[in-house]
Length: 164
Image (tube, rainbow, N blue to C red; front, side, top):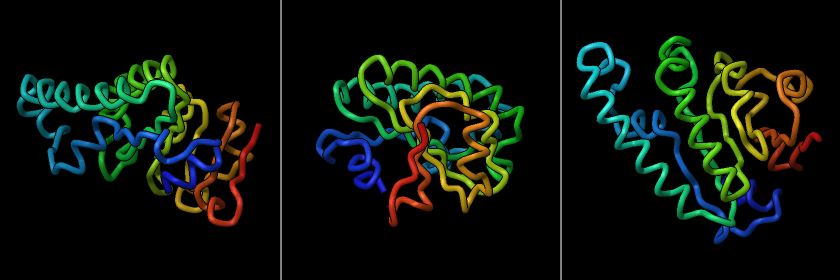
């Protein structure tokens, strides 16, 4: 997927850096951040700061190339709208804005039909990447929420669907 996105945007794989969002990192590491925020808020903040720090380092190291920022977890099976909006959305916004100061950013939204696309659609990025089949959200519907370039992962193998 990373190579296909890079190719669509005119980058080589060597010019591309994959950066996982802090909440995505927590999910992949098996850290239950939402539970920690409820039971041990200070520990949750410390843990989140570590994941944010790792993402910041990767963004800093990508100057001049393409950042593929992978965002997983913005859906009910991982977080309520309040949890995602309250703990993670603004962190993602800040990291993406920082990335855009240094590089082009492809924001890849990973999720199913209940993904909070209305939340994440206004996050800053050069190109918005999602899967219309998995999210049940067409290009036309995405264009109503956001302007700019798009890549529909469900179309990527055939030919990327890039809107203007």
